Image (cartoon, each protein chain N blue to C red):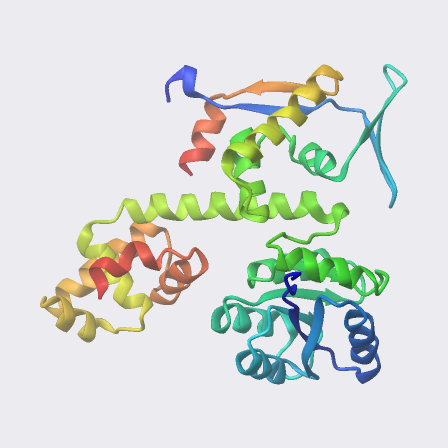
Length: 228
Length: 105
């Protein structure tokens, strides 16, 4: 007996019902693809992704009520098995980079023929990244830049003492001087001194900037060991 | 840094023309009147040959994007760079003091 090929379960999200219908018709014409849900805005897309657990979600970047990039990030976080493709009206480098950073596996322009959706859906389901060839250089450049920034941030964090890393970790979690002092069993004055030293070593000018440094450079893991 | 471990940076030969269309990518070298046809990956690597990006960084970015194993990505990137060198459209810049400063910044 021949093995039954498992279908790829797809979620479609676009504000325009006509475009969703067109995508559904194209994808449903393939035996190995099945459209299991549709959404017309960002919030609904996330809710449907959580509910139906699709293999692939196709999201318009310009969805109302929580755009496609935001929805892609939410889906990547809450349904990690789902591979996301973001599409936009024209090839847009900014949208592509934002989508990939949000956790999307691919990007497609609405200028592409609708049938390209078929191979794109299969490709991301196979685990491939989907980037328009002409935009590949810019994407690689951005990834290199991001890694350099993170390496530089790690070097700066590496220059902090253990106590200063603890203070930074707590500060990034929203703790004030008194909370930091309480958690670390030190006086508020000592906490303030650690904060000032830490700000100076990081080269930032405020607690807010320090907290943003942690988030932007994704270095919380380097601090959580001592801050939790 | 130990001199033998210092990276080298690939640099595009100046004054070349890159022409991209949906169907092909071509580099024209007016000095030799030669045209080199490149696939999309080679063009992407070509754009990274800015004299400030190491092959190791290119390999890491390809891995980050594609999920390819590092040895496979390294083989692909190095093959493309060697082909650029053989075609005479790429030179290499040695690591210098300014790179040290940039790295420590």
